[in-house]
Amino acid sequence: MDEMASEPKRQAHRAARGHRWEQVELRPYKEDERALFKTVSRQILFGDPDLACELRYFEVAPGGFSTLERHEHMHAVMVLRGRGECLVGREVRKIELHDLVTVPPWTWHQFRAGPREPLGFLCMVNAQRDKPQLPTPADLTELSKDKTVARFLGTNPAAP
Ligand code: MN
Image (cartoon, rainbow, N blue to C red; front, side, top):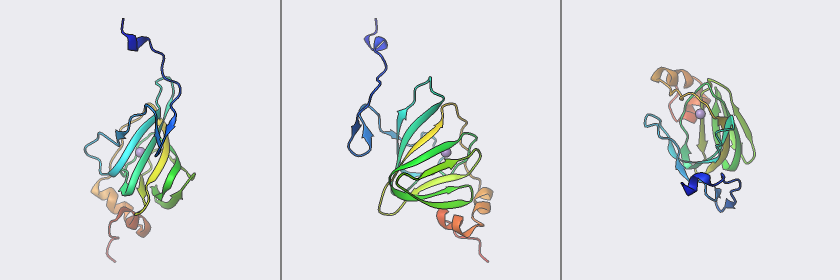
C-alpha cells in the first residue's frame, strides 16, 4: 500500500520569513506563454478541491507587473506587502498595505509594483475559472485614450 496516499492532508503551515509558508511551493506566476508580465511569483495558500475558491499570495518585484487581462471569474485582493498601483477597469489606484481591491467579471486589470518596493498581495479566486483574455492592439488603443491609464500601461497617449 502506498504510504503517502494514506497520510491525512496537512492542515497547518507555519509562516516562514519573507512571506513564505512551510511546505508551500514558490511557483512561477503563469504557465501561459502568451502573457506579458515581469518578475511575479505565486504561492497557493489554500487550494483544497472541496473549496469553491483558492487563496494565493503573489509577489511582484520592484518594477514588475502582472498580466493585463480580463475574464469571467473574479478576484478579491488584499495587499500584504509594499505598495504599488493597480488598474481595474478604467481606474488607476495607488495601493498599499491592507488595501482591498475587487476585480469584477470581464474587467481589465493589472498590478504593478513601485520602482523601489515589491508588491505582495493575497488573491482569492474561483476554483473553477475561465481562461484569461489578453488585450488586442485595438483594446490597448481604446484603454490608452485615457491619459492616466496610458501612463499606467507605459504607453504613449494618442497624439493630439
Ligand atoms: Mn486575473
